[in-house]
Image: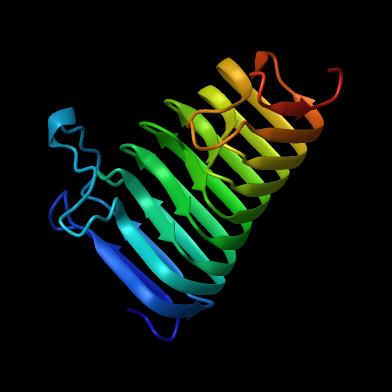
Length: 229
């Protein structure tokens, strides 16, 4: 911990190490997390939940943020960074080489200036059950989805770019996505909106500017409004 620089450096000594920050507040701090390098474990060895039911390598629960930043390298967990029931504003989130999901945020109310993610073994970003504002988003090489939005989330994006991912954006289960500009260079689908869980409904999407060479998929319970529709 470097109090003068307001910086916390966290590194693993074991591939399954994790850390939890709970019921606190961070103002102008930078959190750096480094995993044990480039490790490709067997799928059966992956920890989805640890003993305490946490999915992240770096976890924040019931936290208040003010102008904080995250720099995450690697992480052999279900989520490299998991934020739960948290609120406030975050300056930057930068994650690279996540084994599964890079960023998972649940039941939170957050404003983020920049999210930048390079390479994730599953989704680059997974948002659920909250209110999220992201000014600039850049994700690349997401094995499954660039951005997944679910369970009554309300998401506002200003400028978003997804490169080299299977699906660009997935909006489902009564979630709302409002975007000014989306550039989605995805392999299969640039945007899908649908109902996944029976207890919810479809997705609702509005995009002002959409650049996408691949298709848009919408089920009968969902709505998508975008240019040249």
